[in-house]
Image (tube, rainbow, N blue to C red; front, side, top):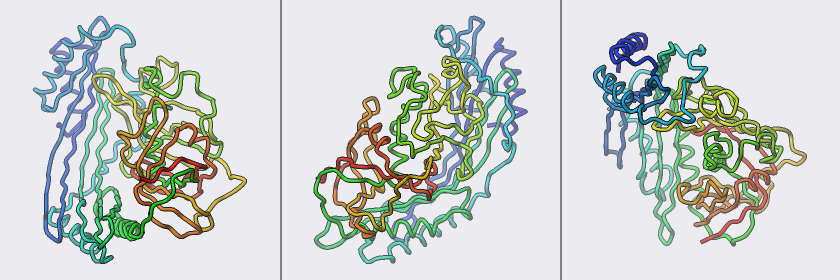
Length: 448
C-alpha cells in the first residue's frame, strides 16, 4: 500500500479519469502483525502476517453505485477494483442509494500524528512470554499449565479517499497479551481463568497486571460449589456487562432499526429503556482507548455519542445513509462493504446520578458476581431481547467469594437495564470500553 496518502490520492484521481469515472470513494486498511505462543518454557508458535484490503465504491451517471473489495492493493489492483465497481454499478440499487458522508472532508484534530511504536524483536517477545508463563505456573501448585497464551504486536494503517477531495490516513500500533490457565487437583474438576491486556507497545503493556489478574482469578475458582437455582441479585463485572450490552446493540443501531431488526423503532428516542442510574455513551476517541479510531469506513469523524442518558434512549449510531433517512447527522460508526453496516466501538458506561442507596461486595449477602459470560453467539436472541448464558463467577457473602460451578444466567435485556439498582462509581478499562460494576436486582440463575 503506498505510504503517502497525497500520492495515492493523485494516483487514484488519474486512474479514475482514465476510466471515465467521476465519483468514487475508497476505504483501505493494512495490518502488519507478529505473534508468539509458548508451552512450558519453550517456543510453541511464531506467526507473522501482513494483511491488506480495500473496498471501492463507484457511482455511475445514473446515480447507481457498484461496490467491490480486493486484497490486491497495488496500483494495478486498485485500477481493476475501480473498473469492476464501475461495471457493477449498472446493477446497483435505485432506492436508498448510499452517498458520500457530508462530513468526509471535515478536519480531524490529531489525525496527522504517527502513533506507531517501534517493533520488538521476536526473540524478546518469546522471552517475555516464557517469563510470564513461568511466573504463573509458580504462583500456585494447582496451576498445571497455561494452555492458551499469546503476545502480539500490530501496526495498522487505515485510509479513506473520495473524489470530492476527502483524504484521511490513520497509523498506529497495539500490543496485547493474554494468559489463560488450567488447574489439576485430585478429585476436582479442572478450573480455568485468564486475563487480557492491551496497550500501544510492549514497553507500555501491563504484563504484571495480567499475571496478577490471571493468578487471582484462577486461585479463587479452586474451591467451587454448586448453588441452588433461583433468583439472585447479580453484580456484572465491567467486561461481562459490556459484552451483554454489545450483544443487544440493535437497541441503538440505526441500520437495525430501519431494517426492522431492533428492539427500538424510529420513535423510541426519549423513551425510558433503563434505570435512571445508568448512562451509556459510545466514544471511539475516549482517553482510555489505546487504539482510537478517528474516522469510520465512510470517512466520517468519530465522536462521543450519547446513547442512554439517565435511563432514556437519547441517540442512535449512524452511517451517512441511515442519518440521511432519519434526518440527522452520521456519527462515525459505518463499515463499508457490500452493504454499509453500522456497529459500536468503544463504550463509556457511568453512573448518571448518586443513588439513594449504595451497595458493596464487602457487606452484601448472597449476591452473584459474574465475571465473564460465554456462548454469546448461541445464547442470545437479539430480536426478542432474551438471553441464557453460561458464566464464570462467584457467590459473595460479606466479601467472601466462592466460585460457582457450572451455572447459567437468563433474562430479558430491557428488564435487566430497568432493574439496575446500583452503578458503582469506580470504572475499569476493558477492551470494549470503560465501565464500572453494575448491580441488577433478581436474575434467574440455573445451576447445572
